[in-house]
Amino acid sequence: MDDRTVRMALQRHWDASDASDFKVEHEIYREDAVLYYPQSGERIRGRNNIQESRFVQPNKKRFTVRRIIGGGDLWVTEYMLTYDGVPSYVVSIMEFHEGLVANETQYFADRFDPAPSRAHLVERVSG
Image (cartoon, rainbow, N blue to C red):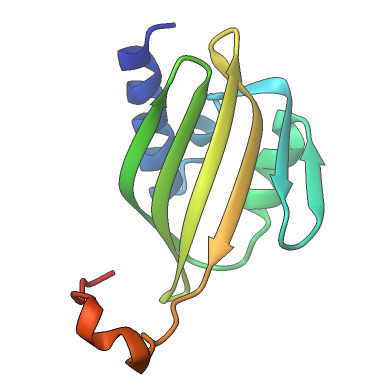
């Protein structure tokens, strides 16, 4: 699969995630895919289990992709995930094998207030 095709598949995945289209959202994963959340120590094996884990979440979710970068079999998506109106910044690292995601690791980070000590060095940007 060429990079353009992968990028289009990723955009389709994130658009489906935002629309809560669980069927389309999970078409990008291999049957034996593994999803890892390092911050909670959870590992979910298998596309069906990944899909079910997301389906049973009671939260209203919104996805806003900031950028997708990568090439070949390694792709990174930076996005904002909003659960019930509360934003988190997320980095998703996807490893592809034979055109589908074999491994995904997601890192979550909450907003924090800027440090006054570096105020003179930075420019403020919104979410």
